[in-house]
Length: 298
Image 1 (tube, rainbow, N blue to C red):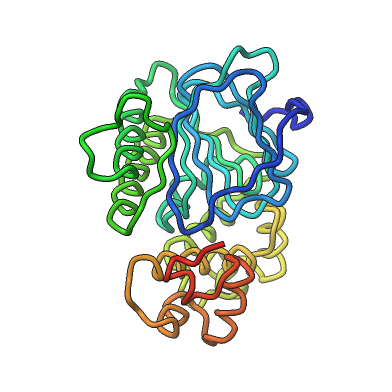
Image 2: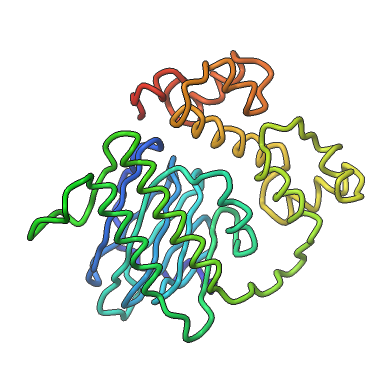
C-alpha cells in the first residue's frame, strides 16, 4: 500500500543502476543499515518480490510498503529510493533489473500507485511458492547452464548472452503473471478514469502504431484537450511522452532480439525518421541504437 515517502530512512547511499540492456537478478536478505538512493532514477526497470521482513520503496514523491508476497515494480526515469523499513530487523527479497517486455505494461497498469510505481499485493492466504520458484529459476537462468550455484555462490547474476537473457526474462514474466493472477483487485484511485486506462492499454499493445493525441482521444470518445488533461492528471505526464517511452522500450527490445536494421527498427517502433529515432534513443539509453545492439551500453 502507498505510504508517505518521508518515512523512509535517511541513510540510503547513492548507487548506480545496471545498464538498461542487461538482465541482472539477485536475492538479498539485508539488515537495518541497508538502503539505496538513485536521485537520477534508473535506465532499467526494477522488480522486487518480498519474502520476509519489510522494506520501504519510494518512487518520486510516493512510497510503498514491501512486505511478504508483494511485487513492487519501479519504472525507469524517476528518482527512487529503497531501504529496510524503520524498526524492521531485515528485508528479504528477490530483485531484477531489466527492460520490461512491452506486453507487461497492461498487466501492471491497474496496480499503479504513482507515475512509474506499481504495487501488486496478493489476496490474503495466496501461496507464494510458485512465484518464488519463478524468481529462483530466473536467477539460475541468468547464471547460465550450470547445474546449480556452488556453495557460497554470489547471490547476484548477470545474464551473459542472448539465450541466458531470454530465459531469465521468461522466468520473470512468469513471476509477474503469477503475482497479477493472485493479486487482489486494486482499489479505485481518486479521479481514476477507465478511458485513460484504455488509452494506456492501446499504447502498450502496439506502440509502433500511428497514435496521436487526437486518435487516442477519439478511441475513448473524448476531445483531444480533455483527453490530454485527464491523461496527464492520471499518469503524471502527457500522452505523447508516454507514447515515446513505450516506443523506445519496444525499439530496445527489437534491437536485442532481432537482426532488423536500425531503419526498420525505427519504423516498426513508430519513428518515421531514423535520424530522430537515433537521437532520442541515445538520449534515453546513453548510446546510439547500433552500439546498444552491440552491447556497448552505458
